[in-house]
Image 1: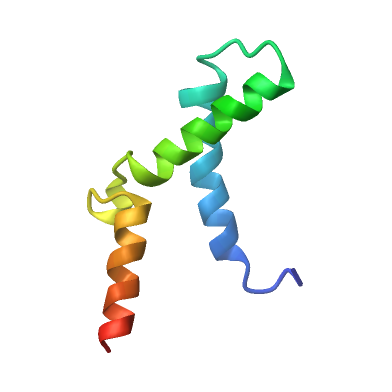
Image 2: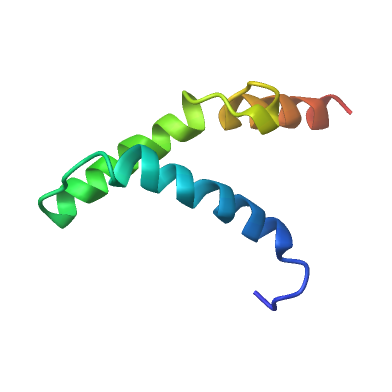
Length: 75
């Protein structure tokens, strides 16, 4: 990354990290690194496929991405 035009990357990260910390990390007492990896993997799957986002009009990221991809293919 060259540092220019990367504000969109920061927007995603600034929205993701607070959710990740408060909805996953702070609620579970992970004992080992492998437990944490499994927990984070599960939560990120939920974040992308099961959790509706207000910024996406109540859609999950997977739904919004598929709809956008289908629109591009139809054009």
